[in-house]
Amino acid sequence: MIGGLSSLTFFLTMAGILAIITLGLNLQWGYTGPVQQL
Amino acid sequence: MFQSVLDGILTGAIRLILIKADQVFVLVLALVLMLALHLVLTRTTFGFALRAVAETPALAQVAGVRLSTVIAAVWIIAGSLSAAAGTLYALTNQLNPMIGPVFLLPVFAATIVGGIGIGSVYGAVLGGFIVEIASGLALLVLPSGYAPAMPFLIILAVLKVRPQGLFGEEQR
Image (cartoon, rainbow over all chains, first blue to last red; front, side, top):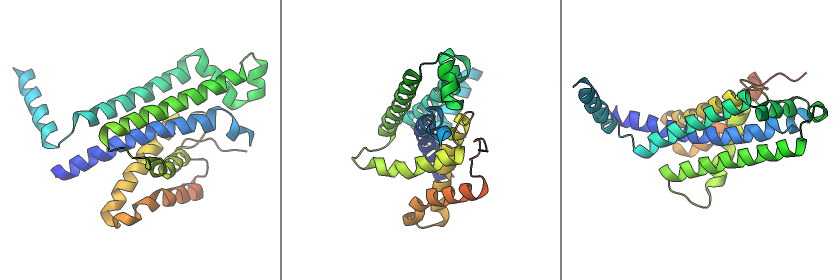
């Protein structure tokens, strides 16, 4: 149980980090126009 | 009295599930950054200019938006977000020169899951959580060597079921 919650916290932390990088890539792809201009 | 009991319970609970202070800091800062970006995109003139450029670059230019400045600003924001994420990663994990490829595929998968374009900022965040948690859960049923394949499977599934992503707009 304790191990599971610790793992969940670790994955949530990593997911938060991944979400921030994804936000950056999403901005570049979606807000600078290249995808719209395809 | 109540406050001290509550503090004791919370501290005990936090110690019990072994949440490190760094992890709490990472989660809180991630949420703050997302909220800040949301506010910038929806409440500021710069955000409106950014969305106009994303919608129709030529029309935005006609309306007085300096295209090169906006695009440069987006690159700076995106680079800053990556730098912040790298710093947060360094707080909770050991850095090595090869962490770039480790993140490359999950980030592409998360972006595709979330969808690209206006309104998909929330999708990007959700995509990040979905990909990471799916990769983590995959370890429960698959040998750890197969875990890196999970982003591939997620990309395939999303492109088959909903090609524009969860929050992306359908292209006509």
